[in-house]
Image (cartoon, rainbow, N blue to C red; front, side):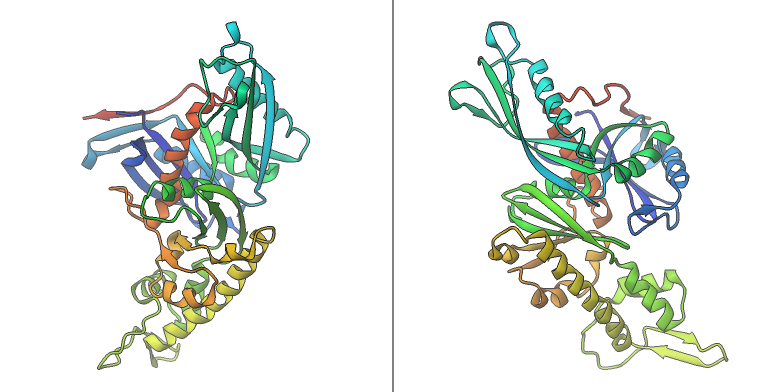
Length: 399
């Protein structure tokens, strides 16, 4: 079995973790769970880094009796939000240093170091280097590092993902504080695209919309290449908060009714209330699906405005027809009943669809990015990046 990878993501209210491995381009899950820590991330800003670190400490050593697993997590792949993300094309060349002009791992590391050095004064922190192709003499091109090939020179064209230093440090610090090594940093939508690209029945070019609890990210993927993201402050909690206020109920109940009904356009022979509440003076108030529908549609109207504006920003340098690309929805907010039907006529995408993870043991939208990180981490192993730690691992022991 392949060496397991532990992938984590800090959500606004909970830590998400998936432990699994890649085999033949698919993710196989050993363990998936969440660890709630309250509302600790707001508008992308971490409110209490120590709470996030504590949550990771509490799950890095655990036993799953049902699966007969004992997992000791010493290193992780970490999903980073695309807030302020830059995706740059970079090209570097070097003379081959190996004996008799043979390309070695040191040549690949040299190229990577040259790329990193070129970003030292740009104000961002490099998250990932994605090779587009490697080139040798006589116009030979390779998708993977051409170790062992003969050539006088080696060049690489890559895509560089980078984030503002404050964002990078804020999200990596809780992992360091938990005394866990970061094996790989991956921008969350790039990880999600890696998972979606592994599904042969889905389009290769699309707009990826990740609807979280309080933030939504919009990304462009063309021919399976991730080109960039933007984001806006809207999430599924907006709907929940309006239901709490309108129905005078607690958050758990509001979330339950939102998930159970969503936009409910069914024609019923009877009109049963969704729930009952009190006006504070002992009078019962009945709330029906028509009222719930109105609340949800009003909030989704704001969502659509922000979504279309973000798409305009993301695609401003592309042909107008790019807006017709299929739209794929992921994240917890994408599960809202009736969302696709509401959204489809209000965006330019030719189709709108929700994508749910297909890996047994993690078939929940909340795990999409973590599952993708496992694929992205596997693909990145060919880069021979000497800056990645080489100690620590995820171990699997059967009882």
